Amino acid sequence: MRSDSSSPRAGRPGHAAWAIGTAVLGRPAYITTGAADALPGDRSVDAMRQATFDVLDAALTAGVDWVDTARSYGRAEEFVGDWWRERAAADPDWVRSAPTVSSKWGYAYVGDWDRDAAVHEVKEHSAAQFRRQWTLTERTLPRLALYQVHSLTTDSPLFDDAELLDALAGLRDSGVAIGFTTTGTGQADTIRKALDVERQGARLFSAVQSTWNLLETSVGDALALASRNELTVLIKESLANGRLLSRPPRALREIAGDRGVTLDAVALAVVARQPWVDRVLLGSAGVDQLTSNVAADTVELDDSDMDRLLAAPQDPAEYWADRSALAWT
Image 1: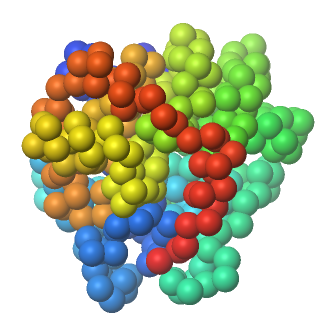
Image 2: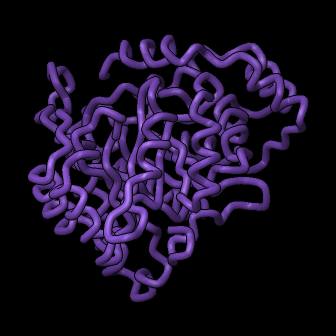
């Protein structure tokens, strides 16, 4: 994927480039702490659509040229597609400068726009689910560059499903890159297993999106391996779903205070400095958050700072248990 027009690494030297994620924007509830004040109060479809448009416009103005979404993010694909088409209709040159768009399949949104739904999304990795969701994604999103298997794990039926693997390879051969995202304590094992998947004599996956942040660093070596194997590496949940802001580690508080910058700017700067990262997803819930996030570009960290900030990650089992306990709000 690195050789195509998506230009995965477009940040300044030594720093990964940004992408804007839409997990918190496409539905009325998500597990990100600290998003409530940045989101519309009523969380209606129209209000969330406008909030998405506002954040995407601000991201584009800030130089962010990648938008990431998913079938399971409520109406996020619809919002991104509507925004893209509206901008294209207003500007004949839009298509030449439009951002890269990526999405995911494998989870279905079942929350019915209810913040208090008992279940918000359901996972299914099957050939039938892929075909259902790809039909909808293709219809909704213009010029999709990357389609990712959502939350692949080592026990996913995908690895032994020849029909599904062939269908994914067919999409790859049509010009849409195929990637996967990881979650949970087995992220590293999933990446290593996925690197071995081939179809029609070529590696199936050309991108991986994983969770890596100051609290969860266990997948770093596997992501470095993926990078050496020419996969585009995208990082999600760089702020630990807001936990790094609501319960910041001491080193993060002190270094941000010494620099006179925000906690999120420092935490994101650490992720962007990892040599194997191509894109860092920003989960901004509003324009002010987006502005604060991209200020990470101005944060200078020396080796001593990096050592302090990365000195005390959580045990992965504890990290993922804490994440699982976060409420949808």
